[in-house]
Structure formats: C-alpha cells, structure tokens
Length: 312
Image (cartoon, rainbow, N blue to C red):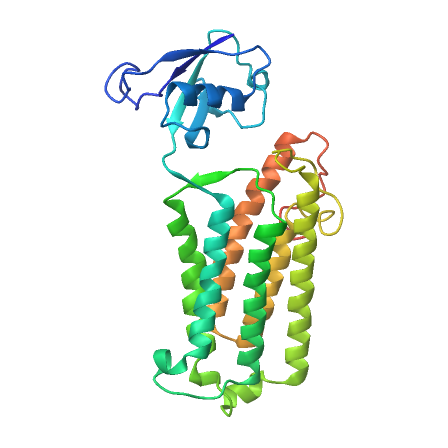
C-alpha cells in the first residue's frame, strides 16, 4: 500500500502554505502488514535528518498517535491514507537520562556531607541521624543507577534532549543540593538538642527498617516489570504479583514510603518539600499509566487503584 506523508500545518494555514516544507507531502510504499516502525524507517530514508526516534506520527483530525511496535492496520491505516509527521527535535536515550538524573544527587550529597567548611564555613561532627540519612540516601540513588544498568527495559528509546535539563533539576536540586544542604548542616550536628531528639536508637532503627522494606519492595516491582517485556521489544502486559494486586504502580507507592521514612528521620522542610513534589509527580504518572492499562486491556482488574491502595 501507498502512504502519503505530510507535515500537519499550523492552525489557520493551508497544508501547502506557510510552515509546510517543500519536500512534503511525499509517498512511501509499504506492505499491507507494515508496522509503525517500518513506516518511520521509510520516512527516514526520504528525510535523512528525520530519524525514527525524532518522529511523532499522527492520523486524521483526532491526531491519534501511531505508537511504535503496532501494526498500521490497528489504526485503520489503508492505501492512499495520509499520515502526519512532527519532528520532535534532537533526542537522548532514556537510559542515559536516568544515569544523568541519579548521578547528580550522588555527587551533591557526597560533596556537601564531606566538605562542610565549603558550605557552612565551619567544621563539625555529624550526628547519628545525619550519618544514617546520608547512607540511606546514597544507597537509594546508587540502587537507581544499578537498576538503570541491569533492570529497566524502556518502552521508549529516547526523549527530547532539552527535557533532560528539566528532569535533572528535580533530582539535582530538590533531592540533591537542597536536601543535602539542609539535612547535613550544623543545626542537627552531634551535640545539638535536635540531634539528641532525632537520634533515638529505636526511632532510627524503625525508620531504617521502613526505608529498607520500601526500597527492596520497589526493586521487586521493577524486576516484575522487567520480566514482562522480552529484551528489545515494546511488549506490554498486565503485571501481577507483589504490590500489583492492589495498585497499578506499586513502584511509586514504595518509593513514596521510602521518602516518608527519610522525612520522618530528618524532620527537615527540605525533605518534606521533596517528598511532596516527588509524590505529586509520581501520582500524575500513576494515574496516566492506570488509565492506559484500562484502555489497552479489556480484562484489566477493575479493583486496582492507581497508586494508593483502596483510595486512588
């Protein structure tokens, strides 16, 4: 079949008018059983600068997005139909993005914790709660780096390059520099009244236990998701098992619990700020994924919530 490829014109302009490149529209020939990936590859042959990862393909007035890994027939694409392409700009691999995001907090926490005079103008002994928080937070982000290398399988290969700066701000600033500066400072150093209050051995043991439970549970859900997707594919299946029987995104639930433990341990406004912002973002992602699961799978368990069991 022959597929016409065009650039969707800006609102209020004709498709062949201002904003449409002279190379568009053009046609590509594909087998009737062609996939979205094959169409993207054919477009890339016609427009060398428009590699598959840069393409966003839509169909018709509703602008339905053609998802990679799907057959064109799934969207009702037939001979002589027109598909519209948008250039998403320079891309960067999701795995690389994750490495960058999680490496920032590791660096900031290490520097602030170990070079006190550089940030506080004085030297002091860290308290038990500061030492415990430091090692737990470092363990969290090292775990995320290791998961990126050995566990995660990404449904999307890339993201727009400029987005890495926005994403990194969340991690580098909120959970990195800002969090480190306030929890490792002299106000909770060894010998201060606040350090004595927060340094209860029972409290530290309890919150450490909650944190480790949440981190190991989070790892378990990531392994479950990994096992659903064969290597090199974008296969999506319904996850079952630990955590997934109650919510669609238990990985977000367990990560939230881990940061609740850190906030309770440090009693810092910076840790509460990061908890609120990160939980809000994960909630948005969870709702989106929950809706996608229900839309994609007719037999998706109706009793599941998005992120918080029995609530939402």
